Length: 319
Ligand code: F6P
Image (cartoon, rainbow, N blue to C red; front, side, top):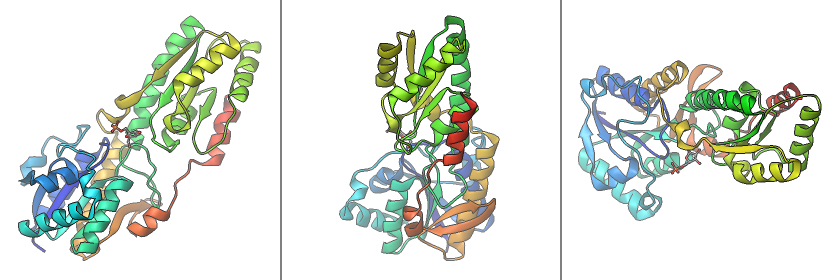
């Protein structure tokens, strides 16, 4: 093998840059040439690519976002798009492809694997919903960002003796909500994986107020419902002065945490080692802290659910 390519796809995740840097530098260390594909699969189809020499990844380990840009590419979901992507890589003489992204990005990588390109996925999404591994790149930073915002909101919630509903990202998973809710001392955490009743949320709030609580924080995962609706329900059923904050894309930006930089560096380097060994159609992963790889089919079957024990702990600690 002489040449590999790297791309970032789907929603960006803090730590992607550290991962791309690890891919480029490990590949060059092993005598490979690296092509950077911009804007994910969209850039592959458009031929939006650049050679990545060693200096192209200088001064990026600490930066959020992705220096390769990213996109969600509908055309690559079609067989025609996938075949064109394969042909592009063939024309370039690219034999291996490293894909940073989540579930949708890995499905594209699996198609290319079936067409004959050696592909390795690197789990990168703030949602942390890729299973069969310890953690996804970007999650740690996103939770830290959410916590910083929640702490600030708590200050003003205390001053004004208000109830705050804070909606966090996560798509259809509640990992960010649960981690931020536990670490942020929220009164209630609503996640899509655990059914809830708003009347119970209200009853808990009222018990707290009866005990003398002056303010409350409710965390809502976007997949569990709309923060605005939860806020409206609480205000209508309690009369408490309630405000709603949607944290939104702020959770996807910012400098990656040390943990995300370490994870991305390890997985990026490991991905290159894997393609060099001829492994393909796999995700590079850590399991109990050790580097491993998992076939995409297994990754798609694995479901990562927030821990029920952690959910119950968050509930107990916020009585
Ligand atoms: O998958 C990451 C994520 O940030 C989700 O948490 C969120 O639902 C989605 O992407 C938002 O996507 P977009 O940036 O396309 O609005």
